[in-house]
Image 1 (cartoon, rainbow, N blue to C red):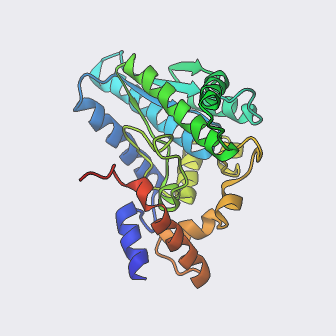
Image 2 (cartoon, rainbow, N blue to C red; image 1 turned 60 degrees about the vertical axis):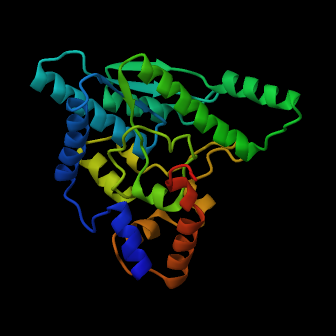
Length: 268
């Protein structure tokens, strides 16, 4: 129990939330950061069609709408970025998310040509990457694209990672794990779902099975199959609830195994 309490403290997850209050907290968190950094004017989020990016995108859109009204500065904007690898199987979910969020601006950038060029360059040097490594390349290419857009729009790259993903290290180091600010970091999966329900999101977006969908050989493989643990168990763990001892042990083993992902680069 001591390890569980320590992890919960580090992740900052509350055992219970009131969705309306958490929405306000997330929006105020983003607003205050922008107001204290007066050169910043935009928020950038990669929209995948999943729960986390949909929620983060909606929070960002609410933030800039409130800032435009409160400051009378029309230059604040939210930019949604679509970054499919070729043709995305769940493209309809992405479009549903975009229609729900109603971003100020949308960029559509196919990352496949960049990934293939990079892979070809590596092959010339005798480096043949695996399907798993290619998946990480996709995540890092997407983050690179977002930072380029942010740099040209006085913007911040907003992360979509939640507490359950951070606990398990279920993100790509310097890929989707590399962002400027993360408003939903202290929420677990079920709490994020509650916020989307409060915001009247289409049900298919928050009931959708979470999936990274990075590997070509395992398309649409859901996160829980990879982790070998359900998000329900991880969420209960983060809320301080008692769960099966074997599952608790596995969660903690994954946490320590992926510790390097949550640390800054090692220095002397």
